[in-house]
Image (cartoon, rainbow, N blue to C red; front, side, top):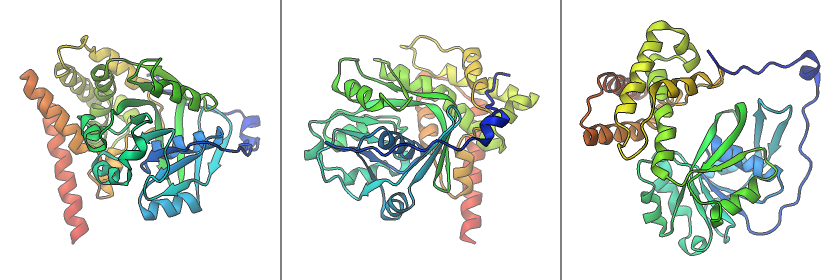
Length: 329
C-alpha cells in the first residue's frame, strides 16, 4: 500500500509551531461563500498571505468564525496558522474574486447572499460539488468557473487539518483568463499549487471517480479507506465499485482505468476519513443526493447496471432513515 504517513523527529516534535507574521490587507476583498473545511482553509491561507477575505455564512457560523477564528494544521509544514475571519451575511462590496465553497445541499439558499450587480465584473469560481454548475450560473447571471481541490481536509472544533502533501487547485480555465490570473496572484504565497484543465467534464469525472466510490464504501462499512484497503473482502468491493464507476463515465472522454484509480486511492493519507459517514451520523445527508443523482443519470445514459453501487446507495439511505427516526424519538 502507498498510503502516506507523516512522522516527525523528536527534534521537530519539540519545536514551537511557527506563527504567521502580521500582514496588512488592502484593496477589494475576496469573498468566500460557505463554512466548509475548504472555505475555512482557503480563508486562513489567503489571510495569512496578506489578502483581505470575507466569509459569507449564516449568523451562527459567522459569529464563531469572527470571534474564535480558525486554526489550520498542515502535515506538510511545521506550523499552525490561526486567523479570526471577517464575516458578513451578504455581499456588500465589489469583490476581487468570489469563491463558492458551500455544501451542495445549502448552496441555493446561500446564493441569496450574493449581489448580482457587484459580481458582474469579477471572476466567480465554484468548488461546490454539483452535477450541473450551470445551476449556479443561472442564479447569479454570470459565468461560473469550476474548480477542484486536490487535497485532504477535515474540520473539527474550529480546527482544519490538511493531510498529506501540498494541495493543488484544478481550475477549468485557460491560463490567460482573468480567473486564472487572479487565482495565481492570490495563491502565490500560500503553498497551494494551481493547474488548469480546459475540459470541465473531464475534470469533474477525474474527481468524482475517486470521491464517489470511496465515500459510498466508507459510509456503508463505517471504515476508513485505509482500513478498507487492508481488508480483503472490502478491497474487492472497492475494486468492483471502481469498475462500475468507470463503466458510466461519458464516452466522449478518454477511458478511465480502474487500476489507475485504485493507485490514486492508495495514495490517500492514512489519517483521512471521507466525510459522508460522519455527516450521516450527525443527521445530515451530506453529498449522498449529489452522488446518487450523478450515478443514476450516467448509468441510464450508458445503459449500465451497477449492482454493488446500487446496494451501497440503498444501505446508506436506510442508515439516514434510521438515524432520522432515532433523532425524532
